[in-house]
Length: 135
Image (cartoon, rainbow, N blue to C red):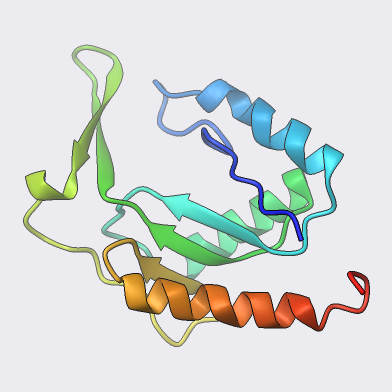
């Protein structure tokens, strides 16, 4: 089993952030067959099933990587149109926490919830241990 972390974003967002057009994830996804993808997201107050489905569909089409596990980071961003750039903030700067969708085919984990993250990782490791293609 190989675990690979891929820094940077998978696509551009807003009009001031290109994330280098997702070049690094594209190179890595073409070099490896990925069984399961975790995707870290910025805090987003309107997170819902449709948003998660759109992201999952995009990542599957562009990178051939199935994503059903999301981890909400400690950061969120806001576009600064006056300076034409993105400003990043941490959770300590934000009072409200976004609602995490439940009862969805996509698992959304909060980076602050170590117990739940560990439980999901163990579940995925068990699933991969039974993967006939790995054996």
